[in-house]
Length: 540
Ligand code: GLN
Image 1 (cartoon, rainbow, N blue to C red):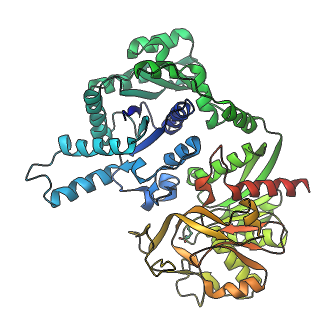
Image 2: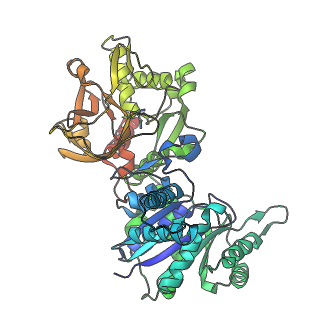
Image 3: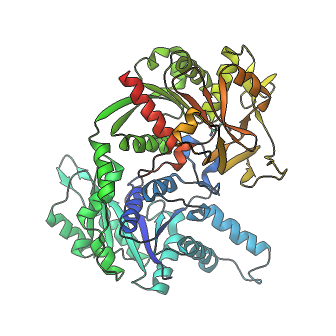
């Protein structure tokens, strides 16, 4: 199979939306009937983002095969409605690790190991691996052209183009056209410089995606095309939009598929976007609205909750509802529970460490006692059990060993090894450099019949969802919980995966992260049900 490669680089500054640009292009190709894969390259030295603080990096997205990846992989899955894997994201740390590993094993037969060819060859091999069995591979290079870290990747790109030729490799450069308010003018100079920098190292982008606040007139587009040496139809303007899901539609309107098809020697591309268009309309002008209290602690960087926020948008698009998020800092909630008085439901997301725990427990108690729909995720489930143990079962010392290692009542505890029913160590766990064993990736969860979660999943008995956590609910307390109205509604090889309250309209908490499998065209069932229950509660 001849794979066509579309490289996406960024210029001028970071955060221009290269991930959304790449996802949008991939979506248009996919809707034109092609099999599209993606690759995100992160030039930083960390082996993966797993050890980075959520405030440093934003969310760590977990793939079905248990890789801790960049949050852009989440965008790709959400746009393309498709699972990606470990091979769809790599970092400089991983490249160096494998080259050094081969060197130690003597695989380079005594040669001097250098960036060219060894590092660059490793990069090319991994790019090719990510594209195997696809019609297209969209490769997004993180960072900005000109960064020292990015150089080996640009060299790999240049070499691939040299080896495979113009009909198999194209380059798209995403830049910013800033508006200088004092002069009221859009400025093209930074883009020209950034393209010059690319050309200096032997890459001439064929298509420019120009981010800007307002539209570019024809003359300015022509000026850009002329100065950056691209065809007139290859300057694609990406204005700010109301929803990221509108970007593929905007790109289509701007005609991005014309130059892509021409450069890659394809017949004209005609994507079928009707269903997508309908969902986007429901995001932008929905019939109803609801307000969800999101009790978190990484609120200075909301990117930390990216997948969860997107999953609420998906559920909203599929129920014709605008989901307004009321961001509530759990530490502020400790002082002021009235912050929850005006919300229609409460969401307790995942998290690590002790800070902010008290406020989350307050929120859970409030939802439980006042019949407010509540969804707890991962840490949110663990805290729901602790709250219930303390306030309903009167086990005052109930705690998680994560915050209180010596607790006498470890309702949430640590199990070093995950042993399955046959007594084998389960795969996809790794010993984290931070200590402890993380349970990562997709596992099967068996749902109990006639529970709320079973209904949410359309009465499926077995579902598959993704995990990222170290601690587990302790089965020792199980009976006591169930006798008192908190039932275990989902299990995976004896591990407690979901719980719910019997005497409550909708109080559900899950150990897995449902947000990781939510897509615009296929919202996650638990999150969708949570939004429906919130709507129902609001109406009542
Ligand atoms: N800190 C908890 C654990 O490690 C929960 C993790 C999470 O919410 N993702 O088990």
